[in-house]
Length: 76
Image (tube, rainbow, N blue to C red; front, top):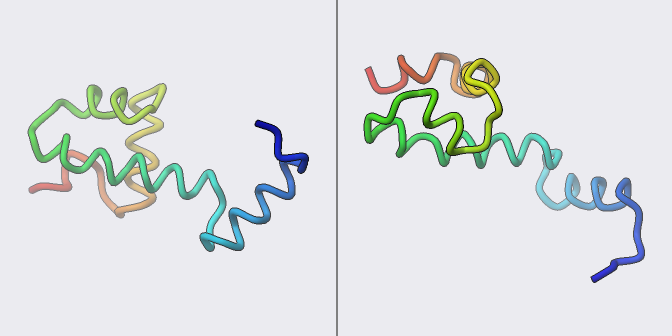
């Protein structure tokens, strides 16, 4: 289905509707989805892959920026 609108228009509408960019929203969704997996004791690398990160470092960096600590420290 085509909407007949530009990507820029969709980005602006998303930001107005959610108060954040699509990239920020997607990052939050991935990080929140990772919390139960970490709580279940899955290795951090496996969690990163399951929630869509291409690298362990990318996941750990995003986690640290969002929560202020690493995934390994989250449930200590």
